[in-house]
Length: 226
Image 1: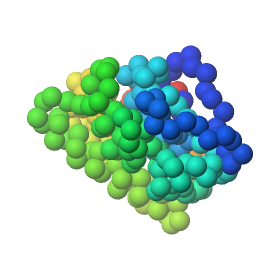
Image 2 (image 1 turned 135 degrees about the vertical axis):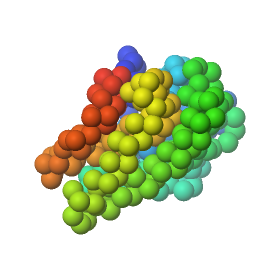
Image 3 (image 1 turned 90 degrees about the vertical axis):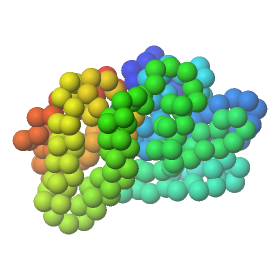
């Protein structure tokens, strides 16, 4: 998925041979792997809020990472390659500090930058949003773990959970109704990759028998091209 559709020149990823970029010079930077769903969460939000000029993308080649990223930017530097899906922890440089973890980052960007807020005001929706954002880690773990077993049987309940969640508020195609929220952004890049992988490898259609999930995918994929 290429985060919300915009005409933006994407810089070449930094690798072990690249010159170290400047740090802590009052420029806000998102360190990102273009193909990583964790990083795409923050990238999607950045573009949705119109922050292209406020947050500079600094792509990283995860298979040949520059040493400066771990040494001087984000010490966690976790990278996993799982069934051709590259996973890493994104980082944001802002106001002289580095923040990591994608779920924390989408909340941070939504709260600290201009643009439309993706956090609900309604108490019921706010509570449900927190439940679903917390569950996103469990969802990902269930699906990734299923790759090692009976994938269709083990992954199915996780997608059923999303289908049921989409029935909670029936006034729109998103998890919280008619407006996009951080919940949708937490799931969009993972569901897209899971759908392609499960269809291609196991011929498993995650939308079969799940009309709400089908509509959610259609709406989100037509809006965000990451």
